[in-house]
Image 1 (cartoon, rainbow, N blue to C red):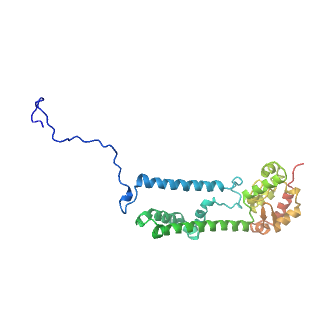
Image 2: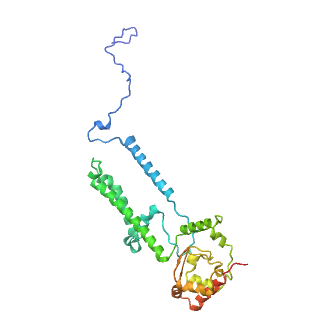
Length: 296
């Protein structure tokens, strides 16, 4: 020990005050060493959550690839027969917005109230379920919320799909993607090249396009199925219809309907009368359609 400022004074060390360097890095005890404690949120718990999320995302993508959205015809705002329906994984939301207390006079409740309750329950879930128990059958609040959500999604999805199928039957409509598949299969069986039938029919010109019958067909909502250019939408094309049906046969279809590859056409005579058309105008439609023949 030095007592002065003399550099020649002998220094005597009392003990060794130097800090020794650790040979190994200190490792904190595992969380299991503390009874009642959980694992570290970062990175242990967060990494597990990410892995589960990745597996769920990959599974969801596989489902969407295996069941892709069907490809229909180009959008046509004048096609009143088209039945809009979302992809299968959004059917439950689509059905939810059609429920009596989520639409019409209660649309605010449907777009604000119900989502607010669902997101609020999800937000409060960590605060409602604060127990240390992880087994689902001993977590009544979290398990009840999960099962209610699953049951609700399944029920709404099934109800929405059943309603869509029923609507197709009532309107006699065949979905556009099925029509495309049937056309492609028929062409393949006939040994024809893979060419769109709709594109081929576009080459057939309308006969007397300024005829008053065209306006009568608009009033009778015929163009909703057959298209504003009569090339067909959910219903068949009417271009060249005079080559296959006479005026009397066309009038019979208008009065009694007809079943065909593109769906069942319901009787349209009463509907046209309801829209304000006279018998003369309806007969004019049949006569004009009978003139629609391919140019020779």
